[in-house]
Image (cartoon, rainbow, N blue to C red; front, side, top):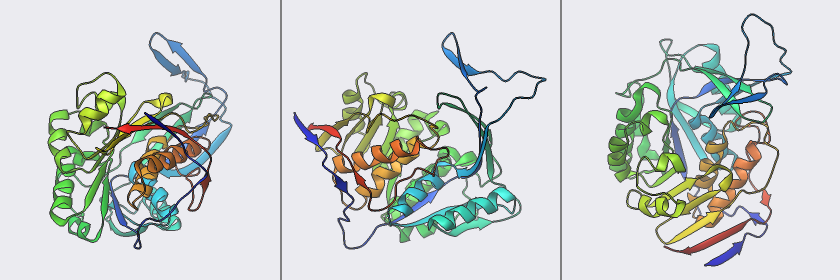
Amino acid sequence: MDTYSHKCYTRIIMTNQKPKILTIGKTVQDVFLTSDEFDPHTEGDMVYTHLPLGIKMEVSGVTFDTGGNPGNVAATLARQGLEVDYMWTLGDDPASETIVRVLDQEGVSTRLVTHDPKYQAGYSTILIATNGERTILNHRGISTGPDGKDLDLDAMGDFDWVYPSSLALGGLELLDKIVAKAKSVGTKVMLNPAGPELAEPSKLKAILEDVDILCVNKEEMQKLVEGESMEELVRHGLNLVPVVIVSDGPNGVMASDGKTIVSAGMYEDVKVVDRTGAGDAFASGFLSQWAQGASLKDSIVFGSANSTSVVTRIGAKTGILRQGVKLHDMPLTEKPV
């Protein structure tokens, strides 16, 4: 096994033409509340923040942001100088207007967003505990369904990559339509499935036949393949997709492109302020480099650094790294498959 120490890394564009990437799915308006009274308590196997009824609790901080996997991913890609579009259905409510404004400010094209008063953006109130963990009170909003009505899926032919996620009521049926359409027009797919998609592993596995990159955590991967160790899960995952990435919280990440297996710990030990968007930051950081021809290990390093930066700030977008950032050394191990 060879050990690599990633030297002061500057993002290098590996191709002459930057890839065009489309993200599809639900975005939300986020309101983050912080308070010293949101302290964690352990009861059995669960950790709680108690909110007693009938009293008034002090909130020390209020932060407004936008979230949702596709929007967070689009922000990373745009900050890395890539051409990014966002596709979904939004209404004329204040949250919908805020989402579009923030994406426009990030440099993400919203020309493929369908605006209709019958739709409504999602809305989340996020209670951040003193240890950085959070409880999310989520209103799903109203969006397109399994048929993907009002989504211009034919537009995928104009893109090199598509990143579908958080498909709301569309779930697996809409995901299947998106992935099938992507295959028919030669567009590559990166997938970080959400809970509803993972609820039916057999159906999801059938869709994965046309997915190029799968990014999941260890528990999620164990729903799809047999295996206890990270390496077992990664090797078995290669039977489903060409590139597989499995994360294991503070224990780091392991990935393979079918040629080598890369294992990496945490990028660095930082104080966690808010974990919201950490997974999106890793996945999108990886794709921002991989789509441009970077190596597996370089893509892992950038994804890890992006995720580490995000958890040091409140909100899913504030800590996202920008183009040209230099990263410090990160120990990695790499070996042949």
